[in-house]
Image (cartoon, rainbow, N blue to C red; front, side, top):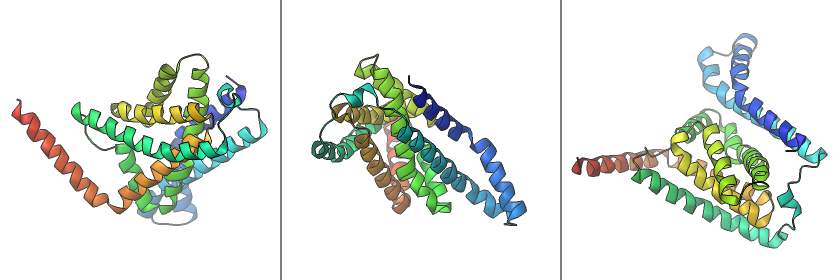
Length: 247
């Protein structure tokens, strides 16, 4: 693996761990320096640190990609023309939602609780710090596609076939989100975005599909939060009733 890819991975890992230091530091600045009430600071600090850490990391990654030769072997092998890539980027949005729907149904059949705690946590942060929506909808997906598709999948794909390269990178993707119980869901996303990357040989295509998907989900969760929670509760009640019939 190229050393520049290693630098990007290190930057991403540091970002993931930075809240241990960053949030307490931001809290202290808010309370001691700016004299903002503790409860107010406590509510908004996670959101603001999310924005700061992700934005800084994206700038670092962009700088590395801009100044270094970081093309993968996949990208150097005749990438698809711009027009066809745009078509696949749009088609990829629908593919991602279909893959997600199938994965949700499989998890539901296996008795895995519906809903993502990670998504709900992000929605809660967005409600307190609206600016953090930029992280969930744009900055986060860009970083994730660079790290998990361009680097991790891309490097694995040079040595393994598509299935195993996509599977390993997708499992890591799920673990980083601290939701191993939803590995099927994250794998469905990982396989879809990896396919788009291999098909077009352009990382911008899965980035576009990922950004569009996250934006749609965040907006739907934010606007129709109460309705979605009601539907999920009803679905869980039905699942419990059906399961009770077979006990």
